Image 1 (cartoon, rainbow, N blue to C red):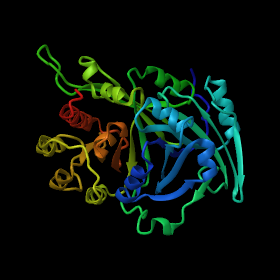
Image 2: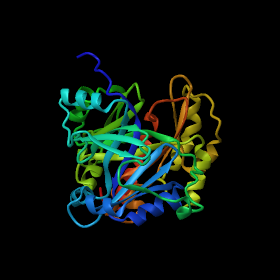
Image 3: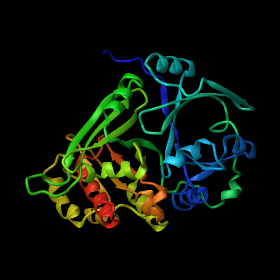
Image 4: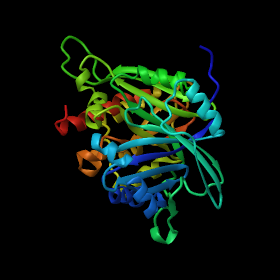
Length: 386
């Protein structure tokens, strides 16, 4: 099969998150993450969609949170089956007609025909499709000057969130989206043959050296697909034997009650200050074992990274992970606690954010996967989930 014609994706525009408690989400994004609340759904939209929505933005990162109002709406249907989670991912495209035509020709399944809207700024056209990402749908939009993210939203005056929303932690954009599957091959084939994405990176490992005496551990296979024209990247994970059921990928699947988005990576220009500030605002991160930093000087010395700008003691203090590539470039990353642990509520769901600073390395921290998995395993074991 030859390379497919690109869909004309310009960027990943927004994430649409379904929640049981919109005020809790508002507190998280405004008071802890320093996002701005830029739009809220109008009373008419609340009634029509049977859900109340707020849109939060920091840099080019846009998150819509919707809480059910009564029964029958999209948020209500999602939350009947799942804890809080990502229900839709929104892409801006160059030509909505061409995108729709290409997707239909390749076997994509539209939920709606192209819908068109107009306001005093211009036009908006959009449609949705189903995906193999559990109950997460994709939305494609073409913008022609339309002011709001979508029709029926009202602008939130800056005075309503005074002193908040300055993006002082420097969130720039979504670096990648990571999803977990019990079996990921159908999603990979769909992304290749329907979306036109290409393989970008992969890794497979187990958190313990599995031998005849091993009694546990967590393994995964991870394959990243991307769209070269836009740079949009999706990392995809599945559990790996042995101990399939104990794999934290499978535990995520059980907690979410299906396949879906595990985490979203947010890029920042300076991670040390961002993490320090986020901690001061009450954001908790997944712990990294002390042994990781004890071994880090030797790992850096024997790797191609050679030298880093940061002090290892500072990385250890903040819990930041580091990984590099064969060209001596590197990246820094850290993972916010999953929402269920962050909010002390299982129905808040197993989703979490990653904070990442890239210093030339475009990879996905293969050397850190083991540390992340072991951290998640410790949390799940402490909570009695494995």
